[in-house]
Length: 298
Ligand SMILES: Nc1ncnc2c1ncn2[C@@H]1O[C@H](COP(=O)(O)OP(=O)(O)OP(=O)(O)O)[C@@H](O)[C@H]1O
Ligand SMILES: [Mg+2]
Image (cartoon, rainbow, N blue to C red; front, side, top):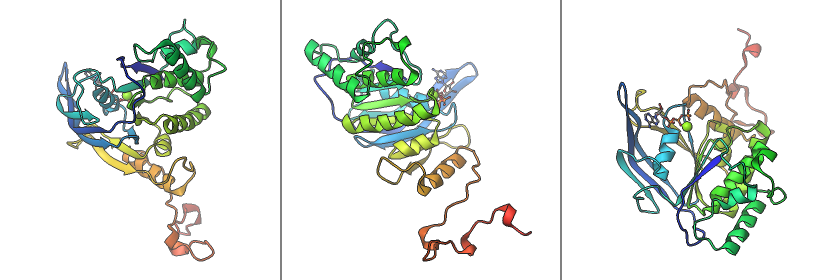
């Protein structure tokens, strides 16, 4: 994960900000003619909400994050952060990407300090950096350089650097995509801890449906507008249950299967019976069971 801190002077920590996308569209000129990548995106994020964006490669997820941060400008529609549209790059947002982009000749502490708003007084900045290093569990490694640390530690440094900006909105583009599976799970929990300690509104792009369901309040499924639908947003799913969630819960398994079907992946998932279908001792009546082929006499 690397951070593009959208530098500007900030007066102090911001609270999480609401985001409203209204009819957002983006069409690129290509050698073969105009190509609409985003069409009619309507989406409201509550302050402090975590929303995950999923969708097939090339459907416009990164493009959408770039519109919110105003690193790119939509051709159509409006994007309001806390009720106002930014005239240029939106300094209320911080963006983190998949690949680490730490400065190799600087220590982790110095890399985090790069995220501080310009004009932060030295003592206050040092205290803030210490606080963030502590939050992401790097207080013992602050003096190391990026080549001396693991990928997960580099990601944590990047996250701390983004938070140093005190963003009202944190835009994460596949932030854990380059990590091994175990580190990824730990980073998901770290993100939830960070979100609880430093509330921001989070828009997270991921290819990992389980990650989306574990972290997000809502999951938005995007599709390419030219593939048979006029709008980019295909579905918006509210994820049940308070965080931290049980990764093995039946409800999440149902949603996972459902969303993967939406992405064109067949999961061969056998729906678990609802509570109403269960008998008193918890056994499932045969009439409601899905019978695997191996048990099917025909
Ligand atoms: N500046 C640009 N000019 C022309 N086409 C662009 C531009 N930026 C993005 N695109 C195209 O828009 C489409 C969507 O790109 P985007 O990076 O948003 O996809 P994505 O959903 O993030 O994909 P992935 O999951 O692979 O990261 C792609 O076909 C891409 O080539
Ligand atoms: Mg992308």
